[in-house]
Image (cartoon, rainbow, N blue to C red):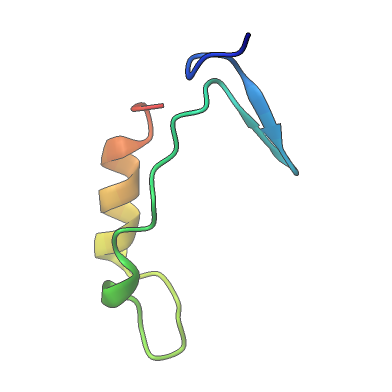
Length: 50
């Protein structure tokens, strides 16, 4: 039986566990849907969460 803490392969993404973070900063993108420096900082701060 798998748990939330088991690794998973999602396409090209090899995740250490099954806990995912939704994209919370979409509203901060540019009109061209490009990431901004604040978005980079946001995800960098949370990179080790999963």
